[in-house]
Structures are given as C-alpha cells and as structure tokens.
Image 1 (cartoon, rainbow, N blue to C red):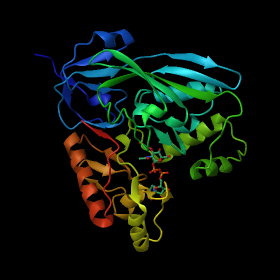
Image 2: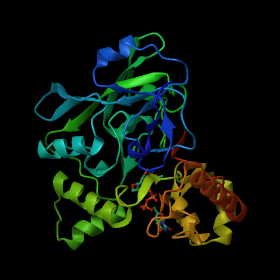
Image 3: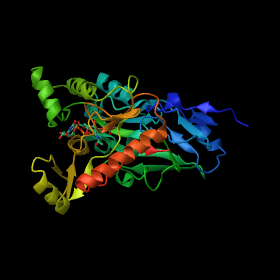
Image 4: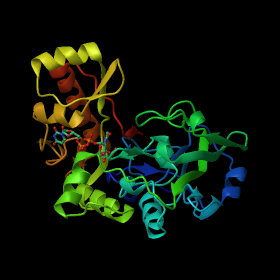
Length: 332
Ligand code: EPU
C-alpha cells in the first residue's frame, strides 16, 4: 500500500487531490530505467491542468535542468534547454544575455517542456516562431527521437505532443534559435505599443518589451500564488466565415481576427463578458474580474466544482452564440 501524496502544491489551481507515487525525473538516464504501468502521467509546472479526481497512476515530475549552447555565430545562437527548466527563468536568462525572440513570452507560467506541447503564445509571438527542434524519448521502448519544427505540427495552442504523442513521448529538451543582433522587436500588439508609448520609449530593447509584457500581464492576469488559476481556461474561438457573418449581423461590434479565407478568431473573453460571466462567482469558483477567460479558485474549490462551473459556461455560450468553447486547460 502506497502512502497518499497531496497534489495541492503542484497544481496552480491549488486543487486538493491525491496520488500514490511521484517519480522525480532529474537525470535523462533515469528515463531509460523506468518500469511504468500504462496511463502514467507527465507533469511539468502544473500550471495548465485541472485535477478532478485522485490519481492511481505514477506521476513523472519533470525536473531536468540545464542550458547549453548548441550553435552560435555572430548574429544568432541556438540554445538547447532541458525541459524541466522554468520557462520564465529562461526568458530572463535570454534577456540578460541579450538573446532576442522570446521577450514577448515573458511571465508565462510552466516549464520549458510544456511550452511546445501547447505552442505557448502571447502578444503576437508563439514558441513555434523560434523553435528549431524538440528532443525526447518514447517511454514504452526507450527510443530517442528529435522532432524538427515542421514535424511538431504546430497550430494555435496545438502540437503533435498534445494529440498523437500525448502521454507517450517524454520531452527532454527543446532547441530554440535567438538573435544576438538586429533583434526583430514585435510591438504591434496593441497593449505593448501603448504601454511603451506611455513611457516615451520609442526604440525599445528586448528588455523594454519584456518589462512591458510583465507589467501588462500583472495588471490583468491574477498571480496563481495569490488567487489560484491555470491561465486562460478556454481557447479563443475559431469559427467559420459563415458563422461569423451571422454573429456579426447580431453583434456588429464583435472583435475578430481573420485567420484565413475561411476562418475567423473571436476572443472568448469578449463572449464571456457579453454573456455576463466576467467577475461572476458561483460557490467557490469565478471568472476573473479583469480577464474572464481565467477561471479562479476563490476558496478551496474541488476540481469537480471548477469543472462543473466550466460546463455551465460552455452551455451558456452555446445557447447565446452557438459557439462551442474548447478548454485550453488539460483535465485530469
Ligand atoms: N476582451 C474582452 N473582455 C475582457 C478581456 C478581453 O472583451 O475582459 C477581448 C478584447 O476584445 C480583447 C481580446 O478579448 O482585445 C483579447 O484579450 P487579451 O489581449 O487579454 O488576450 P486573450 O485573447 O484573452 C490570449 C491568450 C493569453 C495571452 C494573451 C496575450 C489564449 C487562450 N489566451 O488571451 O494566454 O497571454 O492572449 O497575448 O489564447 C494562456 O494561454 O493561459 C494565456 C494567458
């Protein structure tokens, strides 16, 4: 009989649930010696999961560390980063060394290994824009494999690691390519530019962009240490052009971004606000008052309570707009 281990401190939703075994992965070679039952789970920073039950399978907790220079010339550098590193610490390391490309992805919670899984993105940049390759191992046969950028099949918050390879491939490191000179600063995303303008910064450095992103995120996204949450709970909604035209007739002010000739992206935060969910609390769960896309655990809610709250939202948005919301957070 295993002792029960609380998972409360290793999920940013701060949900109480128990497991029987956590295997801390600190060395790559450990992965070659594991004898796992099927259905084991892999956990990084615990910032994109909602645990709705006790887990009777081993949890592999990724703590692989290290940053190595893979290749370098006078203009660019490739870094190979172990998957258990904290993403934001890596961003800060890159800014300190004046390596450009991931400054817009400052302050995203979670580990490096989780970053390609959901193709993390913010303020006009996604990890796919700098990613060279992902290395890892198939745990059932110990085969090592490198996936190049194209093979990762990246989409909006999507990749092959989230679909076909889910829970079978353990990502051990990622390689990213960054600039050492002539940084391509991306400030088109409204909030960054207006923040920098307000500070009279017209030729921003990557550090300025990072500081702007940090300030913007802190102003509207709740800190999980103070108010438990897992970031955006739902994805933004991608609908067909025809569906969009119907909605646009009813809601002429609906914000929207063209994805292609046939698809339109609607901010789910707008749908939630319009439907009255912004700041709305039921029991111990609420949509955050500044950013309704973030569901918050106000007071020791269980995973099931949070899940049920999200079901109410999905039903309501379906009824009001005919849009089926997709969860961004993984449900365990
Ligand atoms: N909006 C509202 N009401 C609100 C907030 C937003 O109507 O209360 C509408 C506005 O039209 C606004 C639009 O939603 O222009 C977009 O809002 P925001 O810029 O805050 O970003 P988001 O689309 O809601 C996405 C990511 C975030 C990322 C931000 C910034 C997803 C699911 N979320 O949110 O990522 O930080 O853009 O780029 O794509 C995460 O994935 O956990 C996450 C926080």
